[in-house]
Image 1: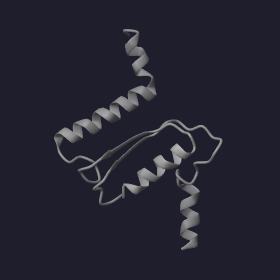
Image 2: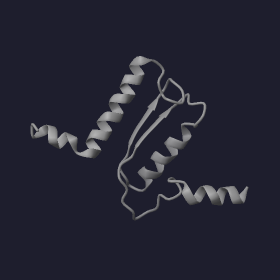
Image 3: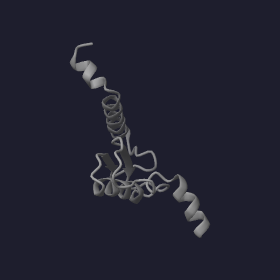
Image 4: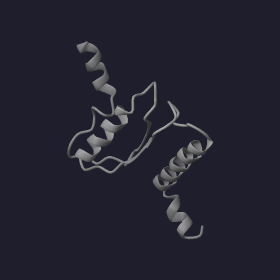
Length: 100
């Protein structure tokens, strides 16, 4: 429905990606077997960022579902990726290099 598309476009981060802007590098996390949010959404966002020459981090778990945790090992891997991304965005890696 046209009115629904207009409403979604008003808040959708994907729809707001435009050439000539600089964006912070997002961490896009998805799962191939997600039964609630299709992985194509993450893939499409990554492709758009690449098209715009913007940096991003992308991880797609081949197993698991909506929370991308197929088992404890995969859950730990996802958590490690998230913490690594977050600490890098916060600049903690520079603090650690200086030995605090």
